[in-house]
Length: 159
Image 1 (cartoon, rainbow, N blue to C red):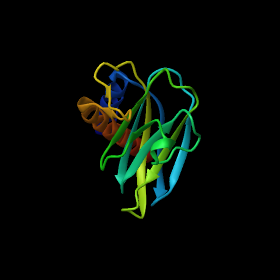
Image 2 (tube, rainbow, N blue to C red):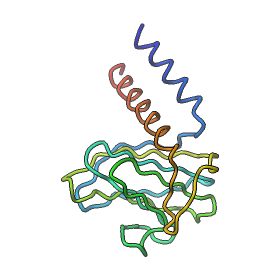
Image 3 (cartoon, one colour):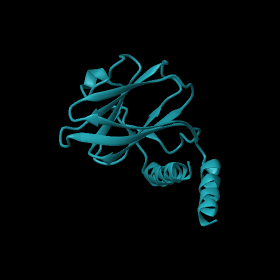
Image 4 (cartoon, rainbow, N blue to C red):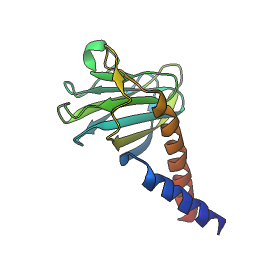
């Protein structure tokens, strides 16, 4: 009964969340390598990369199919030691190529990639490299990540 109650609370939180989850992927990338994804969704799209183990970095391009950390190979990037967040503007040509890079400081980087349709673009600003800065995003994204981990765990136990 306690598990069902927790599940209902988690579902309520996810449904009340402002952004619409479009895609969720858990994967890993070896050190110095890339995993690539293609984003077809229109509109403003927020991408959150959570490094569970190691340090994965996020690169996006509307010009090349395999963005890398080289400055002329990406349009947007987030390469922090923690959670990485970028906002793909609705003006970007689709498909947008997404690259997840495994930093060489770890043999493997395990990550979760979350893709959201978002309407909350007011608190977002770009610097000259088009990197996203938003202090409020990190807190919300961590709570969302924990929720999805718990839901995933619950479904694995249940089924």
